[in-house]
Amino acid sequence: MRGTRQTSGKGFTLAFFLLWLLAPLQAPADDVRGGAFPLIGRLDGRDTVFRQFIADVESNRQRVFNRERNRESPASLSESLTIYQYSPREGEDLFSLAARCNIPYAALASLNRLSHPALPETGRPLLLPSIPGIFIPAEPRSDLEQLLAAARLPRQKDESVTLTISRGGAAEIFLFCPGADFTATERIFFLNFGFRFPLRTFTLTSPYGIRQNPITGNIGLHAGLDLAAPEGTEVFAAGEGTVTEIGDDPVYGNYVVIRHGENWASLYGHLRSVETTLRSPVRSDTLIGRVGSTGQSTGPHLHFELRQNGKARDPGKLLFQAGGQ
Image (tube, rainbow, N blue to C red; front, side, top):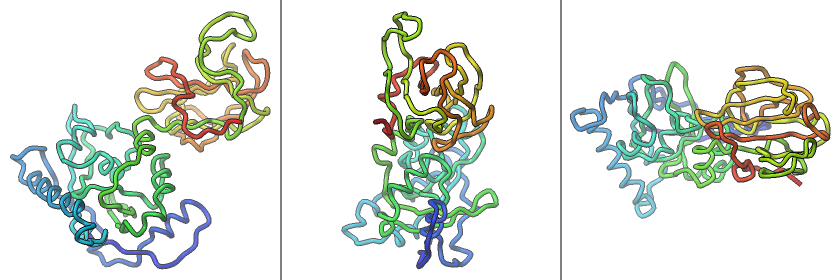
């Protein structure tokens, strides 16, 4: 697959900057892949298309491994990129598919724009690249994609090539980095949603753990963090997900619960006001409320919890972007 390179431009927002950085020159029609991706029916040797895919992968992995010695450019490598498609069957997961296809799961995840390991609904085709690498979209729409773009652009432009991939009737522009894999930070973001602090600035007034309740005097588990901030301070979602609960509780006051995939949820309590709606999709930069002192509270602060499979976890060990003072 051939890629094209950008020559000039200037950006003022992240999305615009990325579009400028990745925007290709006007490409001939055969530079845009889509529509007729070879279809793999089953992931075993009885499927002739799968056999061809595995042969392509093995050949391309050797080229990636030897590219420095052979001085092969990303553009030259990408000429050999063929994208196949396969509809996962019930019981298959991203990691087993990656192992069966001999392609890192980072390549499958980034090409298919997956922000966590859960696969789309059964029957929806996945795209399978014949070269391992990272695909960075021109228009990031998830926390992971924003992280990929921020960490790798423009630093890796010389180690990448711009590709246009057409699927579902729409063309998408990617920066393809042959041979690249998730960094440790990107991997944690992908596997654990990369939770971030919900306040930009705050003072930690009560950590997770056993404490004496300042109002009741009872000893018990404080299941989250108390983050003090001025009344009205903006509260952001800790990660992408869906708002599943909004309410008013005697203890939590005005609160919001966000579901993050199958196993995780976050809770935001003592809000002065709620700035989101039930079932709304959110990202880590989505405003969901403002700091208050509703419910069982001694002053303006945010009570923040992270729960895994319904059990409270210490947010201090899971949060990424420290903003405290």
